[in-house]
Amino acid sequence: MLVSDLSTNEYSLYQTTYINAFDSNKTLLDGLKEGLSQLVNFVKNIPAEKLEYRYEEGKWTIKDILLHIIDTERIFTYRGLRISRGDKTPLPGFEQDDYVPLAFGNIRSIESLLEEYENVRKATISFFESLNEDQLLFLGTSSDNSISVRAIGYIITGHQNHHLKVISERYL
Image (tube, rainbow, N blue to C red):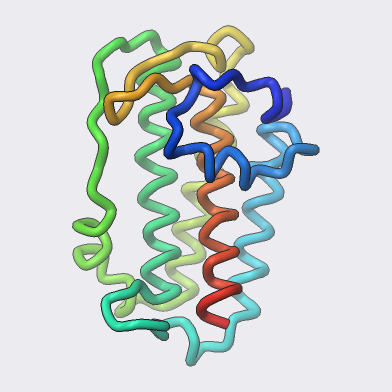
């Protein structure tokens, strides 16, 4: 299953950025698995003095971004779980800017952040491996928009890819 198999009713317009950031030659599971090592290797090569750097007042640090990626992946995987189990309850959005200051990422070691990321990503991979083709096609409502379970998987990796690009362009 490739990202090109998605139809536009499986995700919202604002998520197109993340869908487009997913490597179109990879399957959903390959993207999730390769994304794990990609992020870990990328972050391990960032000089320590850059991890708490802000390119502009009020912007997040690299540690903040890493925790945002972790939080977002947890939330999106939870949405995927609910939808894959046939739950039709509309799921609310979340305000990312409210989460970051309360995550206290800048007082944590990069090792603890990477360990948390790896654990979350491995759980995400396990979840998506457990789904059958029908479950991946289930549609639900999240943030007042229709979304499929498989689109959630692509968005998780595309969201990560988007932020790694931002780090490369604005922080390093």
